[in-house]
Length: 279
Image (cartoon, rainbow, N blue to C red; front, side, top):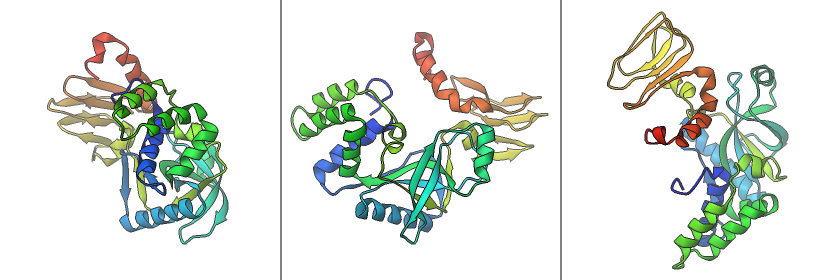
């Protein structure tokens, strides 16, 4: 949906997918997976998804996949496990969602065994998801239903663009998951990482004298830097805790601690005509 105006957030695009699936199959089950995740351990991943589908179909639940924390992470939300439900893969009712914590809170959560990372992976029936949307985001639901009524008609494209552009976007976590009483949590034990930020992606780069580097890079007296080089030689001298990215026509130099704020910077640059062409 990149061609539509503004950032419509995850609830909107998932809702649009749900109505299209529902039009084809009234019993459709959805698996929602972000595109920027690293997953290793295929069998354990499949077992976890099988359990999630089972809960979604038998209990009509909205199922999220939780990951055991490995470090005090401030870039992820957390989920508190509630009562356990049946299944070979550990599964729980969701007690509560916790937004991205500060470092001290993240350290405290790491010591507890009742909190998991919120992976952003979900499983549910399309009709159940839409009923919860009707309850918690009714304005969005009404616009999506107008699109639904025009699927496979000559007016579908026009109505979709019109109604989608009028929707006020909200994330599926804020809009539905933090409010619904149907939330379940599958505790996953496969290897997982969210590589949606430069700091996270740097964990998969080669190591060079305490830095993570890719491309033509020379670092001297530098530590904890992540460098994504291009065709040019990138030289670092006396630097620490930076992300450096060469995309060819743009060079980004950023404090690693700012990587969760990069979206705001990009949105600001998009509003500046002299820089918009580079994005």
